[in-house]
Length: 283
Length: 259
Image (spheres, helix red, strand yellow):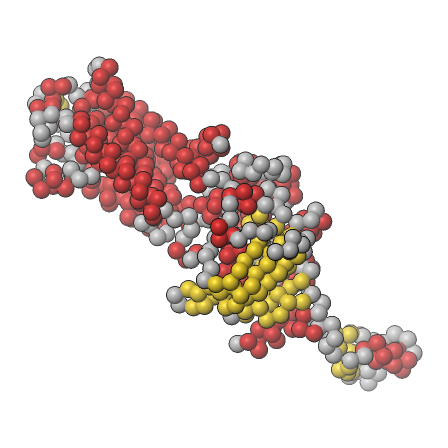
């Protein structure tokens, strides 16, 4: 395995008694990269991620995470990996500070628990019992536990579910900060905006298979797809033109209107458009 | 590593003390039972008031509550809440988690015994009267609590969800108390019931506690005409082994739906 890959998976398969969750999946994530896994519920995202985290067994395929097969990884491997599971951890009567300090003890070179708590935005909740936290705050505590070991690789399974928009933006800042410090991140999310904001590459999974891997800007041929130009015509009606050369259309319109084009919009397919089209074609 | 286990024990104790339900069910409830039934029960067995007999049995029950009920109910809840899975995502060696539970149970068991002994003293129970009887108390306590702890860890696998734990565990504990000679003199129970009780640890823990707290002359009123301390040690020892093997075999860090 080459050392510039943090994750390398090929031919991964996992079946449960009632269904095939992962059906021949391939995936590589480079070191320092943020990779987002997209896909509908039941597509196999969490199963895949939990196999990579060493929580589930697999039926077939090779898996390499930081040079180790998670199925028989030594405990020391866990010092290098950070995990934010899908469900929220409930520590109930313990205080935020107590939980983070306690988990920091498990690692040889942990981050300072106080600064981790600050980083995830729970500084004013450090002395609060965890059962008093809101859903979003509990999720931040999960993230704190995932990064307190200063991991080389961080798994984030739907990290921002239940966040309000402001909290989500703060969280994105946190993730960008981790990227700057060189952390590799594998993220699953339902929020396409999140994938677009954070990910270097996205992979779309449906029915346990990887449909496409691309940059958010080029997924599904988005970058080369036709654009739609719309504007308000002098007679008050809405003009619209589908084109492969929108710049030329805008220049023409600008000449016609002698400058500003009223209500000008150049629309290319959003990530959501191409994503929905991709998984729609699947089902 | 030892300091990690101590820290784990400390956090477990904090968690326990702050959780009102566990505090009430494990420590307060047995104390109230002893207080109420101790006031109701009357009569003598061979010159020993039944209140004393009952208090010795409640001390044994307190150990079962601290080890078995506590862990068999709390561990499934923690598993449901994702706490166990989070521990598994760290490099913490597995034994540290169990060491933390054992430290927690040891401290709770100590307080349970102390509280029940103090209440029992109001009903005429005396602390062990000789060094030999203190020794009996110490080893029956330690061996009984160890068996209950290991069985509690093993039994935590039986509850599929955190909510079903009490429904599985409480009836077992209650039935064992009735058939093991806690609420009624053991010798007055039907023979078949005595034989069933003799399979399980609580009957032997009660008998060991009577050996520690009641006068030697009371031995004649035991089913075998003696406290059978050798047999107490043997059967509790066997249950420790059974509990350990079952824990190693059945303990689960994740819920069933985690696959």
